[in-house]
Length: 362
Ligand SMILES: C[S@@+](CC[C@H](N)C(=O)[O-])C[C@H]1O[C@@H](n2cnc3c(N)ncnc32)[C@H](O)[C@@H]1O
Image 1: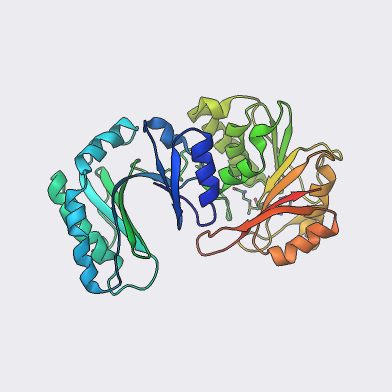
Image 2: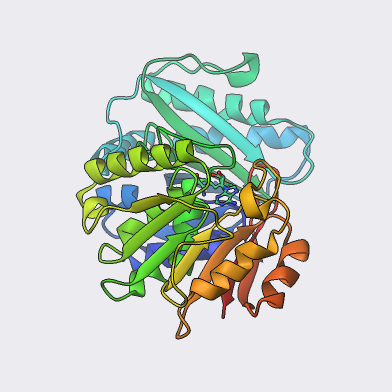
């Protein structure tokens, strides 16, 4: 089971199938259930998902009364935790956990809370694996040691018990040492790069992020398009220094990401890009519209210039932009006014906000 952002379920399902990592069985809220004949370390390389889990048990017919808590201990005791622990090791995850950690979440009203579910499952898994379980009811779990990270999700009458493949969440990229306010969640950046179709670009094609911050979108795009020329511009020199450092770390940690020319970064105002007309094949970006980051320079008073420049630099033949817009009602009319047409648009849930991912064409 892969967990992903709300709104990215189909994108993640496509990534799993296109990369030959399994057959998708079903989509649930933030989840893609898939079967894999030969699960292995390649699963850890999925980019658009937050995490990958091995399913331990699926429960049906769970209601909302407190009595339903009695439904959890049986399956939690019968689940093949030992086999899954060994399989985790074979997939590249930690093979010697030292303690049980359980996180539960549910949709809909219940007369019990997440801690009740966590304790019901955690105690049984603790018995089976002979590892200590400390409830999160009293606060954060203990630091240190190697957790066996169990996840319980409950959607409608169906519950899933699963164990995360990795010790550390997959969405926390090791390369991301530098950050700016409003920096992108890496799996969302990877999804936007996929939607922009950068993997289909011919060698030498150009990809631009006009407000690149610390470079997340381009770093994720690099893996998909090792032969493309990637350029990030930003008005903040500190952000550009961070982007260069993150890019160097990403290239060092993964040879595939390091293939091709290094990502180029330049100080520029996104409302006055130093690029000729029609010379960019793909634009990706999450521009600053005052949510976490104030627009600077020419965008401060004239946000329309962002779209005007995207339209101007995009290739006449097949140029495409994929942008994250926090207020599409305000910004899509600006895009339309400079001749950019919406090709696709959908909403994602991102830490309590609901921005739109919008694909635009000239
Ligand atoms: C939401 S952040 C982008 C975050 C980036 N995608 C990342 O993952 O780190 C917006 C960026 O726009 C930049 N910015 C603001 N006004 C700008 C302008 N006029 N031209 C270029 N960049 C600008 C900010 O410095 C900031 O880095």
